[in-house]
Image (cartoon, rainbow, N blue to C red):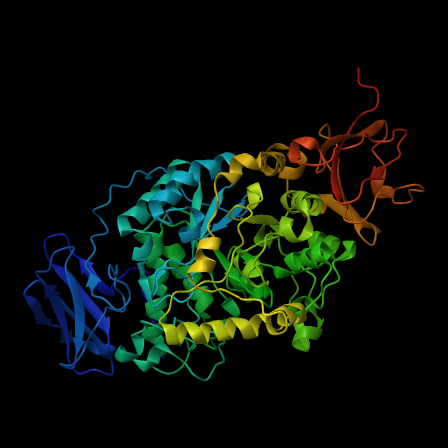
Length: 629
């Protein structure tokens, strides 16, 4: 297997700026490859020369904007596997794009240097706004900046078939989807984020390609490796034979392209557990190293999704890790979900939703770090205890966890407003990096459902697959099989998932809660420290916990009290973490039940050192002088 990969783009159609374009494609199963230009009068085909290792390449007088396909062995024509744009979708011709035409204004932007202090906001371009375009998303960015978000994470933009899709069925990985706009409109979205001081990263999918419009096998079967399992499609090849070298290079160059040609501040790697690689240098490490080499003095962040919560994703190279900056951890969501709805089904069956679980997440980053996991009938997880908390991403909602429910309903809908406010307070003040899902900040009523727009026969197969997936939840299976619940995955689901931005004004109290908590996280010196050595906690009851954030002097300490049960009188009060510093008392900073946040009102503290935590409430207290001068 060749291990030579490039961090600079050499594949696809590279416009040279002088009216010429250089074409390069890997097609080892072919003897002849020609570039066929689409003109009003028909096709004009130009030859490519066969080079080493199965590549074909050549430079021709082809301008930016030209449409083309590759003709293979004198037969059918296919889109460029590394096409920079597919204006007519994945089955149409590719377009030559000049990446240097756009006038960037972000030369002073230095990128994202670390996860410390970041607040991530995940969004789907097609449903984030009524228009569903890059331009419309750019117009909303000032609202995210004002909220306190620091990093915007876009769900995948790889070109997909049809009018709408989550993006995980992408097939033209180098081409941003035309449904959302032109390539330069995507660049303008990134440029606007940087103008506002926002980082922006992109979710990329390298473990499989979608089922419709994937022409890679016409060029080489070596892009795929059937020896590994993959529930979403043919697994990609990173370690099998001589083909693994060019296949690795294809995906590495794709990652580098988003960073170099679109100025993204990093990537979120989807389902890293399905990036199978037995090579001496794992593909995740290579992606991390090569993308960082692309940016020079600019800093980027690489984030990995990992269902098994594999510490290697973020562990440094010298400790056998891959060196990414952060990892998604599902345990916090799963425990909070069970605490919210009282149901422990399917992949949630190993969670009880207790205060102990939430506290263990806060203090130890995750719950399952190698213990037996009943749902999978094996051990799950790896030791994350010593991982800096900012490298751990927690969330109460994301695209998967909303759509993996029968109706895709938001947390406040299924748990009630009070519990949603209390859990939001916990999430946004923990030392781990929080992630919000679009609309969460104003308690959006729109669900987020799974949706695709495939050909009828494929749409039926996908619908059947979603039906079977949701049926792992006994309650959902009952609804589908007995009650006859209809589960849309087409246009109805897509349109239902669009945000209603008028709710941002109507639900001003929820927005105020998120804004105030993010202000505390950013400006309060004790919360902003995000220092796990200055954090301690205890369980107060099955549904209540306390976290104490220790200050380092005049700033004093902070208490976060969370009670998801009924009202709790802490008398007697044998937990020493509840004792204020000598000569000080606890004064309220915030209650999730304050009227300004949409609550029922926050009663005063009883006084004389006593504490009472109302039910379904989070209290934030600060130590202060008992008798200030």
